[in-house]
Image (cartoon, rainbow, N blue to C red):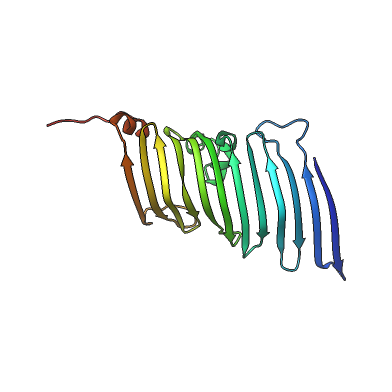
Length: 222
């Protein structure tokens, strides 16, 4: 259920249309399969002439996640402050695969994604090619057979690049420092794109390398 108190102003034939609203989303009595119930509180203002949506407050909660957005949404110059705390990525598995372009029913769309994730940062730039920049921290992260106890660092993600700086990963006794850059073309990494990475490993027994790779590693002594 959505409740809203609104104030609208304009003149002549809806010129300079301006609407301010305070909204509340309540969790539905029943949730359809495959859907996530959401509650939210929002204070916003939409102005037609600059075609902008100002978010003074947009807080939301689901059974396993919470987040907030403040700032301005604009086709050419978005500027949002974002705080996300996702308790279980498994609940967002279908959504993550969808925005990654994985078609339902394909092997890529069946790869399990799980873990807890916190992200504090900003979304800036045009709405058709924004830049996500901020700090992330993950716990018990899993993608297919690849798993980590913890992962954190600074990230910049845009249509042209993915940059991880001052990253740190841990699994068991293994620890690793991560810095890297992937050149992208319209969000995709293509064969002609360049990449640079630096990985510093510490306290790495053979068993941890095997767990990290998800397979047994055999050594042959000659």
